Image (cartoon, rainbow over all chains, first blue to last red):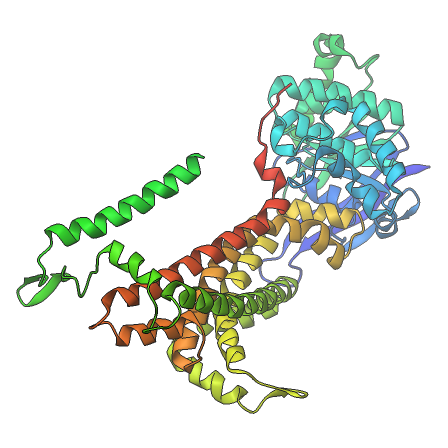
Length: 254
Length: 286
């Protein structure tokens, strides 16, 4: 089954007014179950809007979006996906534990079930020792890991990420990329990942979708076929070959 | 400990300033080109601090209760009115803020009037409130004078709460609202889990302002409606005796000032249990 299916989607903001903007034009995209797809492109190409369409945070002007065979709205109402943004966006008045528990609370899970799930998630992102800390006490990288734990807390089949590592330094970024791959591998989660970084897209993805602006559309799709996804692959000729390929597609798009 | 010391130091500095000016200032005040630029420093205008304190211990009128008891009683009376007015004002302010956050159109329509409401002079308002409410009654309980004063206190204190709370409710970034939407949380649960907690850092300073405004409203309200029993009335009564008994006026003013401090302290106490996360900031990195 496909995790995400977007067909013929157009999104116009302020439709019918003089300041109407076509953010996305005639987008088709499918994400297979367990697949990791990155959306890459310059600012204003609509990649974040596409992510929000999949999450039913905005609705399409034309076309259909379905998530795991349901409409995007149904999927959202059933908490069918987890989402993480560039800013961790943790609730500063809640401890790490209660931040991760937030989606579980809203699902009305029992206290003990919440507790067990939060412990599992914090173990997954390596923050078990920080459950009772407040976000302000954590570094940016740690906050982003809490945000990932929160996004995965309901065991969603789909993870949507909008430049989640964009605000982090290069070293933290690479470490979190490794962790994200490990987590997605372990949980079998399908992922749609928005990024500016070519190397990040290549390292993480099974498929990189290249977009261009005004109006936002998909101009190329690059399948990434790397033998492994460990540290050594970052120095391999294959890796650089794909980076060059994506860079070329971006140039041609612009 | 350090706090107590700094409070004490502030108190000493204030007394020293008062007595210092009294020692060096011209008893008839300093007049430049027909305008008095410094006040009179004679005993009638500026009684010694110790005279005021001594006056507190002496009877109000010959054979009556000591002044400190009268002032304390009046302050407690006004405190009660202030508390009622503050509570009513805070509730009204909160509700207005929530409605304005929920409906953009209400914000645009209502906010100018909320601001306008505070430019109406209080002294003009007090008799109006007294006039409107004179015929009201709650079943068998007729409208009381103190309720008019409480309405005036509420009228002053709802404003900072409404404005501060509105900003607080609007403070979460768009991603916070999107996150709640992604959890299929509606308006009410977004309010409870996101907007209300996020607004607390805005609410508490607003409540402190509202507390101070409620005291001012209660004192001025008592004066302009002629309500008996409170410290506002006492200030007026004692100031009539200012020429014969100057220290007495200051005892009532001291009471009013302490009342303000007490209300501010009580409001800050509200914060303690709700702002725990603000107090232990020790950043860990890894």
